[in-house]
Image (cartoon, rainbow, N blue to C red; front, side, top):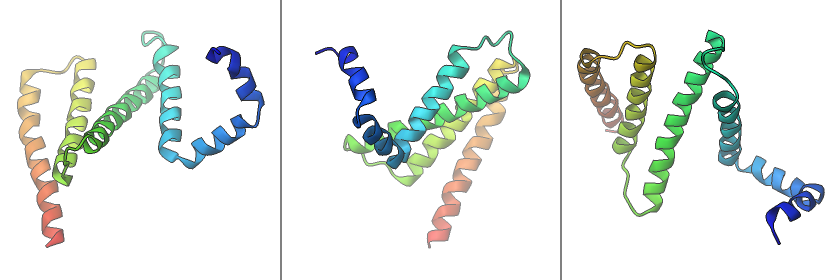
Length: 140
C-alpha cells in the first residue's frame, strides 16, 4: 500500500502521539527536524534581494550552524564506519567548519582575496595549536 494512503491513518491514530514523544525524547532528531524547518523557511521561501539585512544575518548564522552540523555528522558517520577519530581531529574539523564559514562570509560581501586567505591561515594554525596544546597541558 502506498505511503500517501496510510499517512492520514497514521496522523489520526495514536501512532502520531507515539511518534511525537519519540522525537521529543531523542533531542538530536528534534534539533535536526527544527533546523530543517528553519532551512526550508529561510532558504526556500525568501528572496535575498528583497529581504531585510537582519534576516540575511540570521540566514548566514543558520548556514554556519548547518556547516557545523554537517562536519559533526561526518565525524559520527566516520566513527561508525570504523575510523578512529581522535579529539584533535574532531577539533580540526570544527575549526575547518569555522574557517569555511568565514570564507563564505567574506565571499558573500565581495571581500575575499588571496591576501585574506594568506592572513587567515597562520591565525588558524596558531589557534588550532593553541587549542590542542591547551587541552594536553590541562590533562597532564
